[in-house]
Image 1 (cartoon, rainbow, N blue to C red):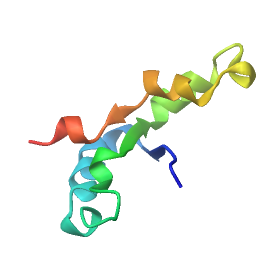
Image 2: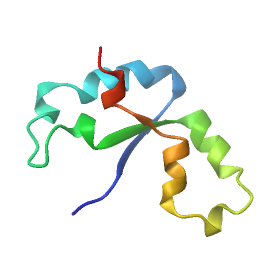
Image 3: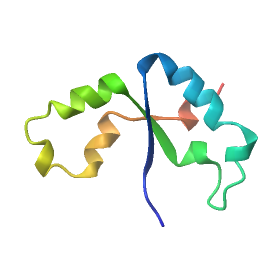
Length: 75
């Protein structure tokens, strides 16, 4: 399956999510490291998204505006 993956977590857990997703166990997947195919969405961004007037008519592409790529935060 080729699907977009998102981890939704509290704002104050962002750094922990980024650290955990980079663990070796998540780098051995058939399609490559999970950190390259998964994004993080904070609770506050999800709450903001839920307020969109026409959310029921939007495609899932709207998530790109609220998601943060995990791979871009590698130190």
